[in-house]
Image (cartoon, rainbow, N blue to C red; front, side, top):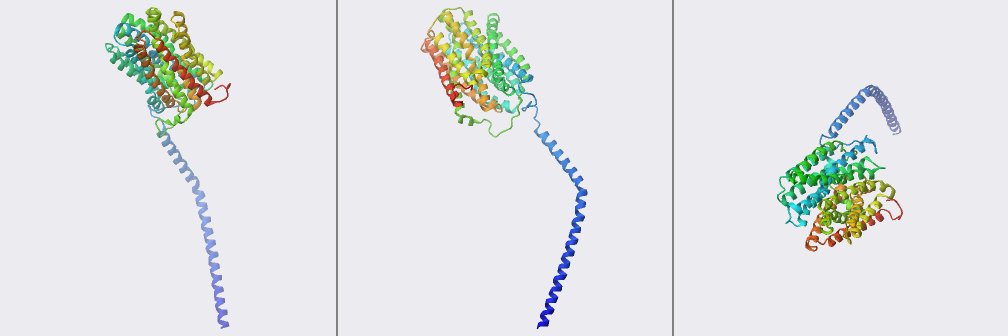
Length: 480
């Protein structure tokens, strides 16, 4: 028994020794195999790295070819410096664009006066004012799709198409001046669709090119509308007197298309905009500051056009001035507006953009209620025209700057498009309502209720801009 156990344990030890030797030999052989593999991998390393680099270059070239914007898509110029020379080229082109888009809107008072006194004497003022109302109103409601197009398409293409639509609409309107509804369709609706494709990029893109002088740059652009109204109004009167409304519309349409086509070559985005799922982001309405701006813009535009459309008629019917003097009032308003829009751009960095916006709105409202409402003299009419012209433009020129300062310039086109939805509401309420008040309550002669209507809404606009001011900063003397 003992011998058996000893022999069995010896055999087991022999087996364990043999197994250990086998494992050792296997480890040595595996180590040799690893050593044999490693040099081969080190030899193949440079070739594999070369293949990987070639694959990366191929993938990057494919990605570049895919991401390169096509000829109609938005292209950025981020390599261009901020506050540089090209930015001022954008400003000058935008100024010319607004000269013939908003300039035509601001000079419509010349057409309305002629329509009312000569061409359509039996039509009420409220009906004729719908042409000018549609020009500004539809331009604002079309601001949302115009802003989307500016983000997704080449803005040079967008502005060129807008100029073409404006020009062709005026040419077609020249053959449709025998009925008011035809003029509403052509001179009003179709023209305003083209104007929106020009107005939105012209007022939003300059903010991308400037930081320190942003208010001045936008002010110079928006001053183009005053400059356009300044010379387009007497030029339109001269063409109407000499050639009639038909040729006046044709010549204006041709000039609008030619100038806008040249200016559109420089209207380019500086920043690239990433694609997103939401075409229009309405979440901005959750910000109380935007709500104050939105309501303030509705109130402001409700009262904005009453002096532009009715002050010349007031001077002729109530004060007893000549038709030429009445037309010159519109020229004076546009001249003062040109100076005021550039001046507010210089004033905004000193006082703060929102502070300057509220101040301009307040003074414009007081010019209506203090100088126009209680008096019926030539001096007070001229005073109202000058003061209102100097400060009413701040409502147009400073709002895009406020939007850029509060929410940045990356999405400014679509945000401004949403803002001009408020302008659409105000315009569609304001001008027709003031005309209806004049026809139904004032019987076409008493303007006091119409003037009060305009001034009170401008004061309401000031109130909401004050709320915007303290929603942005509660420090009383801070530049905001």
